[in-house]
Image: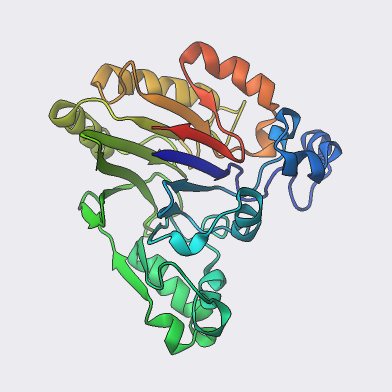
Length: 296
């Protein structure tokens, strides 16, 4: 099964929509043609964060979803399950779902889409998009409201939402533990975006999972802050990711075969792709880029 990073940037994109800082100007000079061709130098250009597990499980729905479809030649009608981490714009652009089905979409592989998220995320969708959603499309959107630490089944996947350290008190952003049995193996992904240092109860979950099931197959770390110390804020920088990874290794949730990848980068983090890779490699981490595929 492949895991694909469709977009790997924070909210502004990289180059950012409204920015002329040196990091953004460096990325701009590379140009769209190089990005489209997938050259190594084009790894400096990053669109808003989104990932695809296999062909049927999509994580987040940012404003750049249409570009991801074109760049990766995706048939997004194959997607049966959509996980939404939280309702921030760069992870959930709700109007996109109003043109799924009805007279806008024909010959779909899957007419029905199962959406997994917090109650506040579903409410936000109907608040801002309900007025332009027709009944024919709405009846094919099946919402599953999640509660932290309560696993749910999504077809062949088991999804456990974990509370993220992100947003204001009273909001409900999620990290995700995604599991699937495939060819006699338990594939297990920790998708840890957007979040700063994890809550104590999340660390308890990691420890229990390690004892019960052993190491996971893959971990995707939030690395938004780059060279900045975050002091346990709503995102992580590189130094904090490395400290977190060390603790996870001691707990046994990360093992020798676990793929560790850093993702979700901001131009404010300053590092180029090559600089990130040089810093990450000694710690056993990969650095994501748009279009990166990992075989699990």
